[in-house]
Length: 305
Image 1 (cartoon, rainbow, N blue to C red):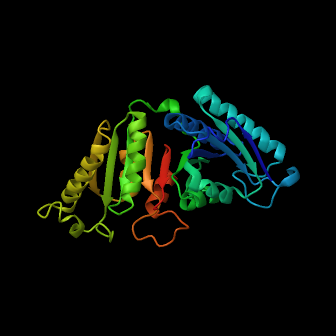
Image 2 (cartoon, rainbow, N blue to C red; image 1 turned 180 degrees about the vertical axis):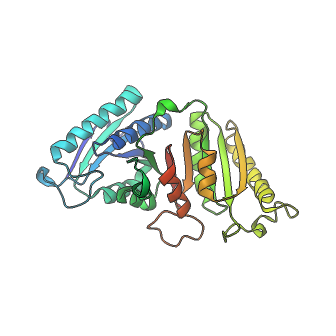
Image 3 (cartoon, rainbow, N blue to C red; image 1 turned 60 degrees about the horizontal axis):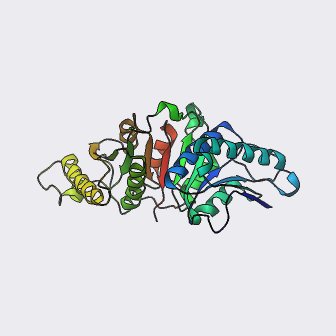
């Protein structure tokens, strides 16, 4: 079963849409608020998707974004989400609501090829529970094929100065960096804020040896050579985004810890979906996973394409 209520015609719909997984929960509403503002900033339509409801309003056996729900509940949740999005972006935002019987992860992953971004909320948990992201969020972040933003349940936009708080992007000196930087620079440019480029490494990490950076600084220590590499990358991207103020940081430490520390006063984190050397496309990398588990601000996971 698929049901769609569209606020715009096919002719006026942008090619790439911003997708939000909706389930009527508080985390879902927080994600809708963030995604509506982001969609308005990027001039894209917003599609609110409630997945996992079986035909006839009965519950399917598939796991949902949050608990079981009837078709009536799903429609009510979508109506509420649409009202929330409109309150954030006003009448300028084209909003579409979709109710499907497909399991949530499968449905949202299916939107990947035509999506600019998929947004999901996540529950604010403590202890061991917080160390395990929901199956839907994890699957979508790893397999969607487009950037996926995870918005923490307790994220409050009023506590972040959206006009000045920077964006932090984590790099791992891999071919994937260009895709990550493209998203980060685009976000910084559209929000008119600065960008912090961060690279961290440890002596035990096989992908960050001094030899990789020797061409940038043959007489420097690894951190110094890595900093020269980052400055060169920042300069190249700065030619395309001259209005974005960029700072770079290279530190010998665990990547997730450095990214989170550098994002203490930030409004958004951008990282790649998989660490160097990751072999399975079904899971996000250890650094991305660690950042998601502990971040108090939205984090965009960029796929390796």
